[in-house]
Length: 211
Length: 81
Image (cartoon, rainbow over all chains, first blue to last red; front, side, top):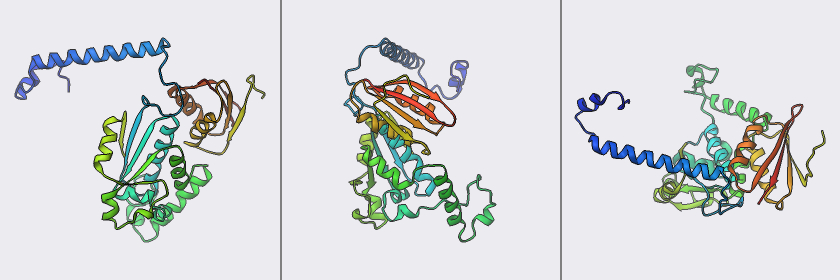
């Protein structure tokens, strides 16, 4: 999209962009870039920040992760990122919805499976990966690797996240959809929240991720 | 390998991988007083970059040094606030 080099391209597309408006926008972008650069320079110059503590302050960064996948492998990225961001002193929410809810489900989280089908990195053709028992085997292999590598288990990461102050949220709509009970989840998990709660935190967040 | 720093605590995270070295370092630093120094001993090679990034992005801590030994990575973190 090189609007810089080919002004005629905008013309042929139906002149949707008013050149004056575009120039004003560009000016505004430059202004913002300048003020950001200035602020960064001030930071480098050692201007003290008001909040100097490792705990989350009012000015601390925020992150929202929406976790939608309930497979063994997909449980890891949100929990690792969440616990690490908490170590940075960030205010972190992980909103679990649909299959992502199983990560917080005390019983189901012990039995998350890795899918052997549809994963090009599996050393198996899909026709074989689809046979009964293959998912369980792939999961066993991965669990063994994780143990050997000193990587934390999902349960450890959940405990760690909760201890570090991460707000693990279970989407109320999905709880009802899946016929789960609020007591099915790990202690410390937030229930009774919906999309609006997630959006509210997202709007205030510096980082938003859908996993 | 003795350290030139006056270490208050040593955190052993040998055999543990991401995100444990960073997360446990944060926990251990929280228990220190201002001016005290934590030594972190890790075997995860990623801890070199991760702890540097964490210290850079976290208020109140300074990474004094990182030493790469034989399969062991040592990090020295001072609590500055």
